Image (tube, rainbow, N blue to C red; front, top):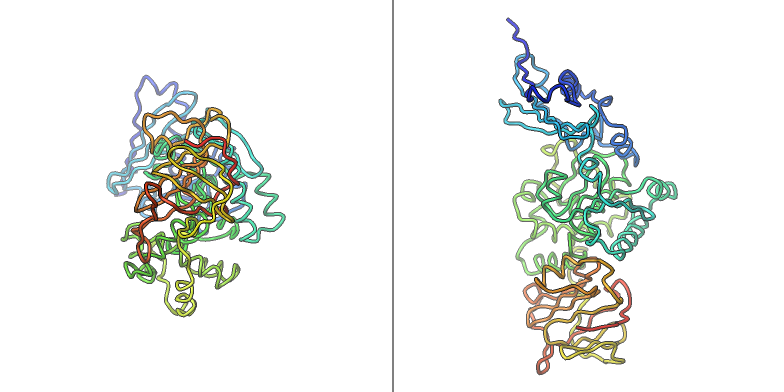
Length: 480
């Protein structure tokens, strides 16, 4: 005997009369979603944004549901008349309803938001009252405007320009991005990223709306993911993580670190024998190892691979190692890769820590000094002498901006708009751009071959910072 589908709608009786999402429509939505036919349930703006850049993922009928897609076993369960599941409706006010789907037998839960009985992206719901602004290629949604400096916008635009050239975007490609914009959603912290995306991370590329959701003002790693997808336009949802993360690291670094800083770690790991990129050509091994090992190695090797294969061949290789299901991703075979001698040559010629140099400094005009240190012109670099820390201001005031990196490093102190922070001790040199909160140059004795201490003369550490690692020339107003 057939048993009717066991379905419970749970809601307070007092609230049902004012329920923006009727019970019957909730049932219809779940049934349609299980059959991949829920397009008519999508909010107009959510649908428009999901389709604006014309990126399509194989096997995904409605990109708006990428983050809410149902696994095959859950679809089968929902389609099975003998299966039991629960729908819980919770009004959130202003015609917003939260729909929670629970399939107890599969230990599966999923949450959906509805506005006026239509599915709405959580990104649109949570950022509805955030500050917005637009640049040439971005639309920014900013939770706390004090955490976003104009220089971060400039850096993102510059990076995008470089990547459009690197990926050989056509004129039509460039016009489309300028017209439709990449969404950049800047959260105040990682807790807010979690609330918007469901992921406990510093940032993520949201594929449903082609958006960067991040707690970092200049998160070019996640932006890189979106840009290669835009270049390909039609691709499977999953790519071998060695290639996917390697591409984003090679050209976008990681949250808070420029690419060179991460690839230097990869060089040390490979050259010292601590780890080898070949160990992570299998997806399971890549996922099993910590990202602090796999990402630097993948980034360093991807830069070599991209340069050796060229754009078109690299993109074909990238697609060849993509799949509609993660479990279908194949290992990368050694015979698919360039000759190992070419890779060994890259390692021999690699110059780590290129942003910070030791040795003789022909110091010229002094452009800033105080009792803790001094900075002078030195050819293609800036000669630095300091006891431990220098804060450099190149603008008059903070203008309301607040640097998260400054607050992290100097808890309890007041930020006055300083542009750069330089830190030195016997084991390291770090140079931060406080307007973007990026580590733009560093030297770490622990990752140096051979390991050398930072040179010191009397009570001052001495080194040179290359000018080309700084976003703009130093015109120092104040050194602290």
